[in-house]
Image (cartoon, rainbow, N blue to C red; front, top):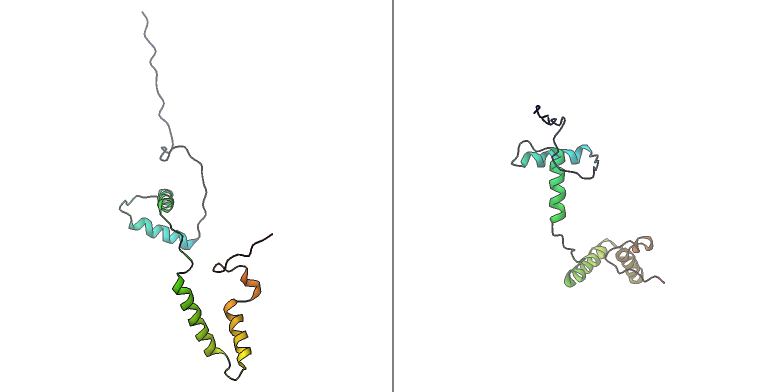
Length: 129
């Protein structure tokens, strides 16, 4: 019988696959955040940690973080803040002005301009029809 043909497997050339198949996401970082990233990499135990791997780990940490939504304010804090604001505004207002004008100015300063009232997060939104 003749000699059998042996199969020769080729070695793959190039960079080995480290993360498997996935979607490529290109990220451009400015110098500030990049410096913070490099500082975070320097604090890690692995000296040869690459930037892409560090970004993957930080994304994973961020997604696992249990972020609870904080309430805008506690019941007592809102009243206290209003009281402190009123006292501070009273100190700033002209004492020679009539009391009605001082009250109007205080209301205007605490409520804010009408243009900004719709953007405030501490006020309930008006119902739209």
